[in-house]
Length: 148
Image 1 (cartoon, rainbow, N blue to C red):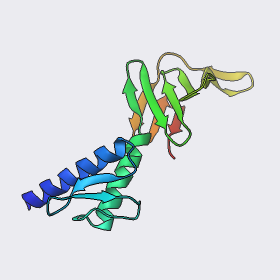
Image 2: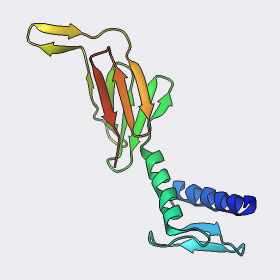
Image 3: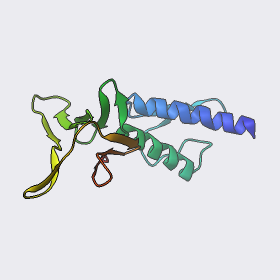
């Protein structure tokens, strides 16, 4: 049981490592110790079931869109849009991976007409996977989802 789990973790780690490097083909040791090359998305590495391979691929994709902490807040990369969005506990700013424009928003108050309630201080930040939220007070939560 332990050997089988170690082999699967090794294969999984090598496959994810290959996917992260951006190579179109992924080499991984097969059950016989040979390198096997996967050249299409429909192929499944030897020793893994289709559902195990799909689970590995789903975890990889979720990781590419997950929010990451930075020195000044949080960041979400979106490989499909080629955007990086930063969150600094005031608002957010999106910018392209290669370009000069920037776009962002900050919440200053909420309400209607003359009944505006200013937000002040720093929100409580909650980050989990593809979702990040700012809790300003008991009434107002801002939330952001970074998905494909």
